[in-house]
Image (cartoon, rainbow, N blue to C red):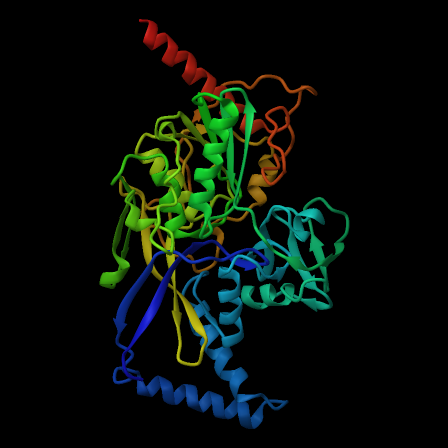
Length: 470
């Protein structure tokens, strides 16, 4: 096939999406050499021989298209947990998801021991409303066992026409027997930004995933918080817990909302020239599709307000980029537990058959040169959510078979973080076993990590006042 001009879309998202939004990021164009001259003829002869044997001797007839598609999928999935081949129908599904709505359940999924594991349910979706939780294993979709099923196949089975039903059989830690749930698919219109003035002077913003409009939605949320407070904020909690990632330019835009112009947010390193990027807090790196500035209405004081960023084991990819950028630039304190550790960028490359491939093309690095691949972001302040058993049961990038190594030589172990200051007692004098950051209303009284973040911001205010009076 002759070389052709192809649109490359950088994606930074952990796992496959089953009813969650997978959106686009910075667009680049490059000439790709697709010459067949360097193909290994001996190995291709072996492939043709195996193909012929299956066609001739397999117990049942097998369609040629299925064999070829499965062979390509095997070639892609053998590279790492995030590379994959998409058939024309799957590639069409991807395009639909970039529009921000489609029929599905609203689950971010990953693979573990041949099973499909729930990374996180998305807010206001059938999955969340049915009670599906992070850490659940999906063992059956309708009557089909999922062991050995690819993530794309599992996601495809869970997506479908809104109003139709699908039955999931769930295995949950400490549950006596499998949980059977029948869910009704719905149009998934994910709300990536939610906000609230949790008390006078202190704002809360949760980003559940990074979409095309996340940056402008963040600016709008900040504008509303400042208007509601009727004064400058004393502190802001940016909640990135269980945020699986999304679009790269969305992450750059969110970081740019809090950093000085032209500050380095993230850089990438790969084999090809167009996989090497230095992305700064510059409009060209996070502008809307029409070139407009999504931060045009951002309150000026947002770049100065004290910030605490909340992270946990479900904080992955694009959300780790934001946490790392704010941490390295000394713009925010990161509080919580070690993040997921996905430090690679996937590019979506269209193919001539109207399908496409999701190919890992680069690793990304925080401004100080850290790779979080298979390690994650280490919090400045360790604030465990109180359920060590849950932490031990959770899956991270380093647990995925075939994951990329960390180029810095770092492993998944975390350095010792400073302990958090004691929280104010909750009304029942006990913190919950597992906070629920996907809940509709942030409540420091029932969310231990959020209460620690709020306490940290208040301590900062006391120190600022003391410094001003000295």
